[in-house]
Image (cartoon, rainbow, N blue to C red; front, top):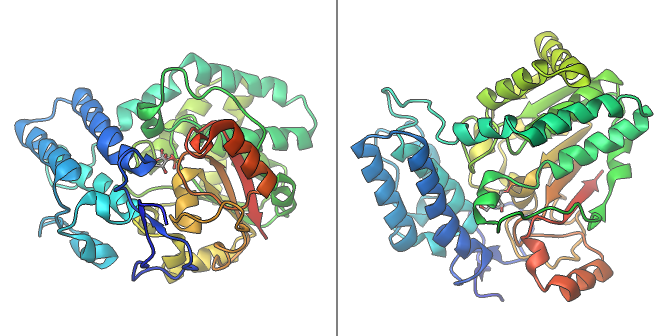
Length: 399
Ligand SMILES: O=P(O)(O)OC[C@@]1(O)O[C@H](CO)[C@@H](O)[C@@H]1O
């Protein structure tokens, strides 16, 4: 068993339980680097982006110290979601951040970051998203302009080709979330390599005029292609209705919230040509209810989807297909465990209440559904770096 994993299962987990849960305590491992390197860099970035007062700086200092060399503390008694977090994992309080499940620890770290900047505290900073400047900056780049302008050419191609291109746009839009970029070396990642698993055709076969749930990941240059894909599917009656699941509050740096959806829609509507047309159609779809935005509290839970509450389970059960975007949703979908990479995708997703697809670039150790040849070729070329480099991607489906 790898050093940074443990077999005892979380008391919450209803998922198959054979594979060890990932921890962060092996120095030099990917999860270790998130706590030891990525989080301190993120705190620096957030401090630089806002003129926070002395109390907030002190709280950020305390979080940095606790999460690198201290232990996990409960939320303050005044926090409205304290009971919720106790229920989600009070057994982890008092332990080192590195010694509890990586998924739980990372989620709770983001909750504590919001506490430090007073995001939930009544007062002037309430509701100020510490990541918003970075998300907005992404929408205002020459690359974003080019991507939107390319839609005019795409609109001239056959509808099938458009769908294929928009699906891949949504997939590769996941490549560079801000947390990832904080860790990546200059210029990385750049290549769209062949997919390591590609169930794209099976996914497209599930677009049969019913309901799509798209569980979004990052704002900015990932959310825009997600919205363009939804617009295309609605326009061509490939789906009749879409539910876009976003986060109820800022999370994992660049994860999309309602405010980010609105920024993306405004960005589209203010563009020219086909991009603006999409923006206006999406606006109408929201107005007439063909597109709904959902911000379920479980979207920010530190747990796998195997533990989802009944109302969410019901919603996914009623969809023709649920698309899970991104790396974190993948970890939550299959469980943040060191599965053998050749485990069939259908095994850890067997609990999911309806057809489910993952669109993900590979940015953490977790993976299933590879054929043995693909895994050997990746290992021969890159040792284990392919798991976390963000240069590989997959589409996996369980119908
Ligand atoms: O979910 P996303 O945006 O694709 O990726 C999130 C991520 O950058 O954050 C986690 C580590 O901090 C990993 O799951 C992954 O590397």
